[in-house]
Length: 363
Image 1: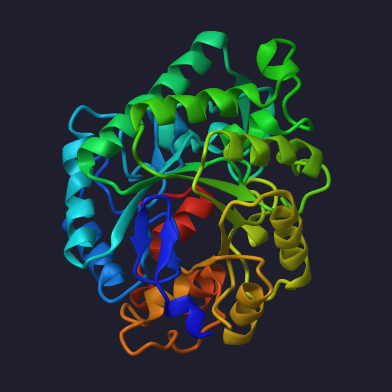
Image 2 (image 1 turned 135 degrees about the horizontal axis):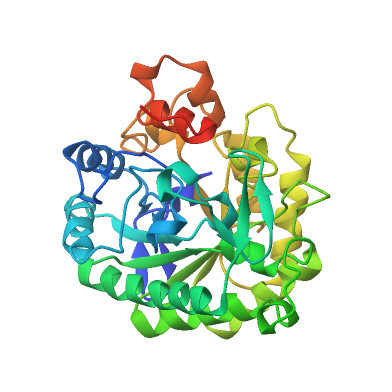
């Protein structure tokens, strides 16, 4: 278990330890994308004597890819200056800051984007019950450009790494998934094309920053979950373009929310099996996400070589400085869902917005 507290080299960077704070939807930004003092306080507390790498909340690359009206933004002219405020508080605590880029596609919230979501093909996300319309070729070009522009702004803001969301049922995953993508153009004939263009645009925009690719090891939904055959080309592409790590979660935001939110009562076996499969098919460093708060589980994952880094959210919420004395947070093993529904709101930062994010109700 002591290995988790050792430094780790990721790309050209050195992490203080092998803990990663994942992108958690806070809903603390102002609607115009400006950063709030509440956000800065949150990330300052997380970074203080905390994980070696702090990923900030999901940032939508375009306004029509948002999941929350108070989601962090990067598509405004002043976005780099605003996000730099978050980077600065993380760096002040001697921790690395990672920008997490995403477009929700069919999982975009109609109330947040002011209209119907768009996806590779016609698709309804059960959470919001709104049918997405197919993206046109020009729409796709604009989104790819937005990823590249976001990467440039990430460099301007001072981020150390950039993570690209390619899983969890969001837009890139929707293009990869043969059960969802039934297009008859090049983006349907080659379902990897959109991911390839996005990764290329991000690399051009941020040529010297290590990249991380986030995936779902398994969507846990036979009808809409991406198959291993569709996921494998992405792993190979990540190696080809010299991605620095793969961040492995579970589930889909639309079609298997309990796995997406890593409910604490779910069995361990599917996650271990998914992680084992990913480990078998890539030599890149792996970050394991979800329910890794139990010492014995985390030790087994690391000792078996199934992961190199551990992504924690809830333990750091419960105890903002869990690594100060070299020990994990108390009451480890809780999932984000335990925090959302098992504790009073005043004890769980961001939980009130998390619940509204899930139901589509805002206040």
